[in-house]
Length: 224
Image (cartoon, rainbow, N blue to C red; front, side, top):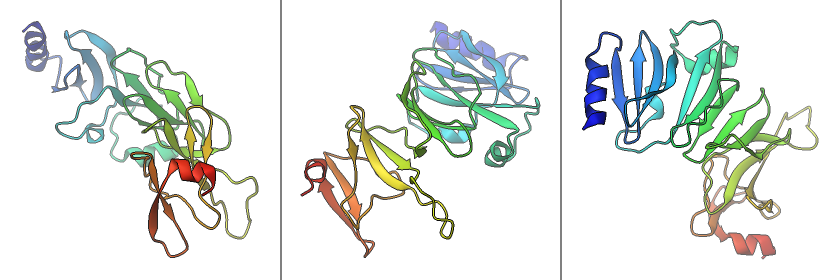
């Protein structure tokens, strides 16, 4: 009841333009800038940022939130991707469970409830623990990382050791286990470029025909 009362007070107050409520937090907006309230109505992220609503699907529960901050103070963001590419906006994330805020220091971010994939510069990604900011994967070999970790496997694009000047950069798609094990596709095959996750110990493997065959992680590790 207290939470509902506080949220109602914020929503009807002249100091706020609107509130978007979730189970354990709410986003409050004023003059185009956003902050975050906890379930007791306490402001835990100042109303200084941009939190796009299109990152949320109706009916879904969220714990980690993507947060953006224009570097020039302009919050009239009409095309976030374009602004990020121009470097006029920096990205970060806020974990509403732990209260950890990465600050908006990254070139781009993509989050799940447990992990955040952050673009450190134009070409390199790292995977962080969203609750603490601790690095899980980092280094200049990662061209892209999916933050949705399933069965302890992380889907990754690796930069090639050598780049062919004629055909440009072609990354290798692999899965990396949290224990450091790397899962690669059989020779002449590859994994999807669409972040297909491990399901029940199985992953889709593609061949020259473009058709996918589901193979078990165990047989791939054993080279069967």
